[in-house]
Length: 163
Image 1 (cartoon, one colour):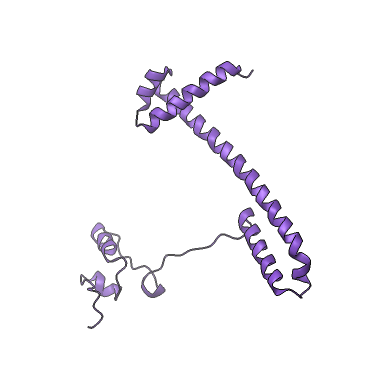
Image 2: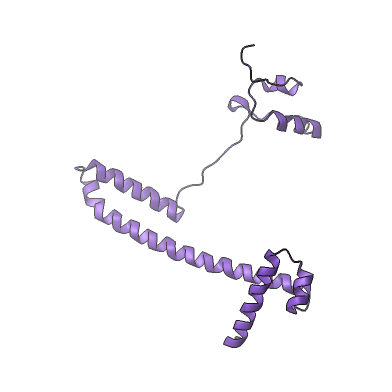
């Protein structure tokens, strides 16, 4: 059986206070004491429930928005399709391609973009044993130009290419 509207209002107010207190930096043991939760764990679990509910509500809103935008893009596509496919209007063809691209992005139809981290000149990232000193040295030379082997041997790149 679901809670009465009065109980739902009391729960909503308690959760609003829970969020305000947590945002203000209060620990769950203090929140539990002030808001009369049975324990800090109960307050923490209620916070998780609130966050999950808000996430679910946002997901639903995003889904509705995505559907509306998809419908708008479909209408634009239908309006320009004949002109684009007849071959007589190259601007319409470009517009249709842009609409199709936007729709694919909106609906998540495109393949994810693969990214790689590379070292100097697109080569491998220079790594050795992974000792702390070596990692600190790699961090210190990040973004500098020059031969990575020379830089790793202890020379610092001064940025002066007149050598």
